[in-house]
Image (cartoon, rainbow, N blue to C red; front, side, top):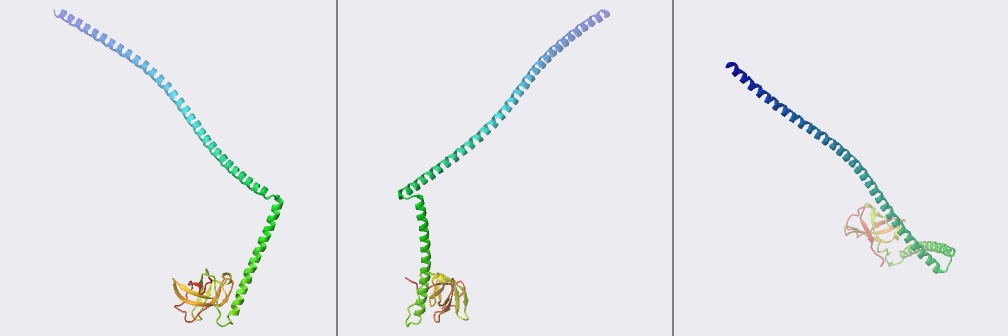
Length: 247
C-alpha cells in the first residue's frame, strides 16, 4: 500500500510538473512571439522615423534656401525701388532745368538780340556799374573832405553850429585817461566822425560825461572830456552816442 501510494503521489507530481512545464513553455512562446512582434514594429517605426527625419532635414534645407532667395529678392526689390526713386528725382530735376532753360531762352528771344549782343551789353553794363561804384566812392571821399573843411571853417566863426553826426552812430571807449581827461573811441572817419564833434558817454543808461573830438583816424578818434559835463569817471567799455545827431 505504501508503495502504491508513493507511486500514485509520484505520478501526480509528474503530471503537475508536466503541466507546469507545458504552461511555462506556452508563456515563453507567447512572450517570444510578442517580443518578435514588438521588435518588428520597433524596426518599422524606426525606419519610418528615419525617413521622416530625412524628409524634415530636406524640408529645412529647402526652407533655408527659400528664405535666402526671399531675402535676396527683397534686397534686390528695395535696391530697384531706390534706384527708381533716384531716377524719378533726377527726371523731375532735369524737367525743371529744361523748363528754366526754355524760359530763359524765351526771354532772350523776346529781346530781339543775339546772344553775342547780350554778352556785349552785359560787359558794358558791368563796366558802367564799376564806374558808378568808383564815382560813389569818390563822392563819399569828397563829401567827407567838404564836411571836414566846413567844420574847420566853422571853428573860426562866432556862434558856430554844432557838428552833426549820423543818428545811428554808436561806439565805445577803448582807453580812458582820467589824469589828462581824454579818451580813445572805436569810431573814426569810416563812421563819419570829424573834429569838434561831441558825443555823450553813458553807462547802463546813465550819462557819465560829454566829450569833444580832438583828432580823428580811420577807425578811431581821440576826444577830451568837456568840463562841467562830468557825472563820474569814464571807464573803458562805456558806450558813446552823438550829442547832436543828424535828423
